Length: 230
Image (cartoon, rainbow, N blue to C red; front, side, top):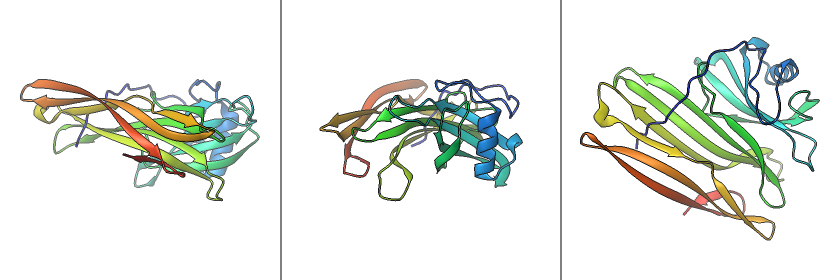
């Protein structure tokens, strides 16, 4: 199904400056470290969101976009797990690459925070992007929620929860307009282990010339290594 996302565009800023986020302002130190780690030009690196360390942990995190035209002109987004706070990180301990990544005029709704999965902690993140569909004369969009963690199996950071909503909006062909907007997933924990997760979504679809709106909560069970849909 094709869905519409409500996107908020942001102004393009200098690549040396980064967005203020809950983890504090990410400045040139993080840009330089990320560029070195990802083998990119600092001018092509943009920090989309950061997260400060939890009380019992020494490191924060950052969502970073590299837009150098190397991947067919598409930007690439990474989760970087830091040693130290985002404002002055000592090094990058781990990274994870994502398929969904906002372009230069997008990314204001990107989000990153540290959450608990019981005996281990994880990263909760949101990325969304939009592109123009010239044939349908409308905007296609993606909203991506993920939970990433290190399961201690030697594989490093990996996604244990993912949900991508795709969308479409056209002035010329409004009958094709549909949308799904999901809130952040909520995790339930028992005896120090995840039990499941839910994600609430609002879906809009065209019924003739009218918009039909439904609200659905999707449930996932923890299978010992990831959240799987029921």
